[in-house]
Length: 82
Image (cartoon, rainbow, N blue to C red; front, side, top):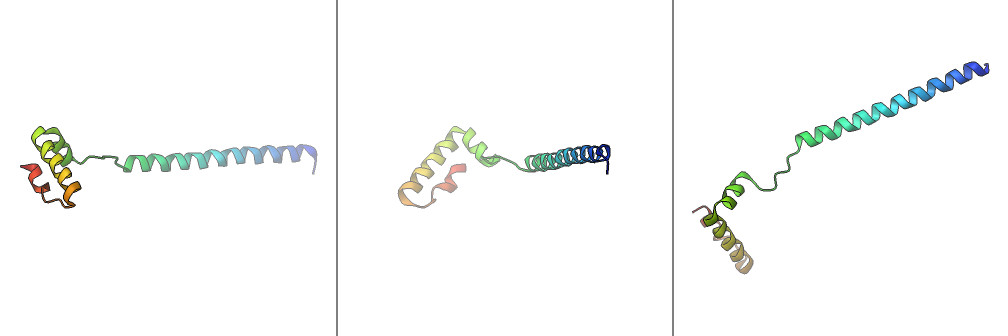
């Protein structure tokens, strides 16, 4: 095998290695985009937003949480939406 053929083989191997790395990077990038697109990060539910947006309901929720901390039960929770 001549030096020219060996050099050409090395060049082809380098190009293939670079292409392989680029393909792997594209696949990983696509996986992260799919995960990000299919994942929701809502911390507060729609019902929770409604409760927190209403001052009277928010006060009832605060009382229910305080009651839970003192008594260890959620007996006052149904009164939040009143």
